Length: 245
Image 1 (cartoon, rainbow, N blue to C red):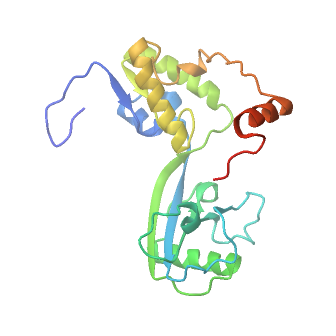
Image 2 (image 1 turned 90 degrees about the vertical axis):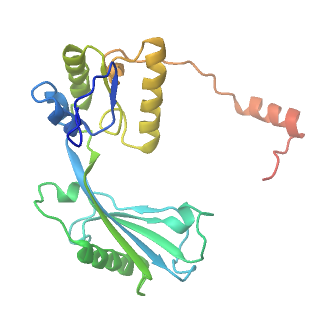
Image 3 (image 1 turned 90 degrees about the horizontal axis):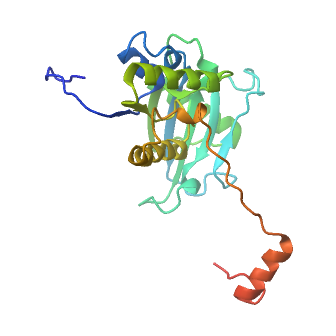
């Protein structure tokens, strides 16, 4: 691997956290299973309003189901996050922060996407129609993330099994993968995958990062206490009344 015209360097172990499709382009013809992973493009619009009581409801926000027709969702919105409620305590000034997301599956097959001005206008239209927010935001930030969310379509498990075999046959366990293309698209999934690889390199379990699709992890048996046992434990600890926060 080279950068800035520097001479190539050799490593005994490499952990790749780029997307599966991007990794496949670095080793042409060797990782066809990763090349077939489909990802969608998402536009994220962040808006700030000075009014802290702008919204009619409080909460995390909402997602728009795929069952909603295009006629009812002409902006191709995916959902709205009420950032001021979802991340309480992070702001230095009062107000309302919102994030509106667009694209995803709606934009499959698109050759071009809305620009920043169009994205801001679409976000304001969604907020006006859904939440009756009809005031101009004080600040707007628009970002386009191309092919950022992998889609675990039918056959994902079989593709990951093939990917494990391809990685082993080509790199003999010296290249491992983590990130949202493989074992989960969420942040928690990515952190867990990175941890599993790091710990697995210590005890020799980690071969490719997707070996669990070939060698499934064993189930751990856990006993769930009954209602009577829970009440008995509460009585023992707190005299029957759980502590108040």
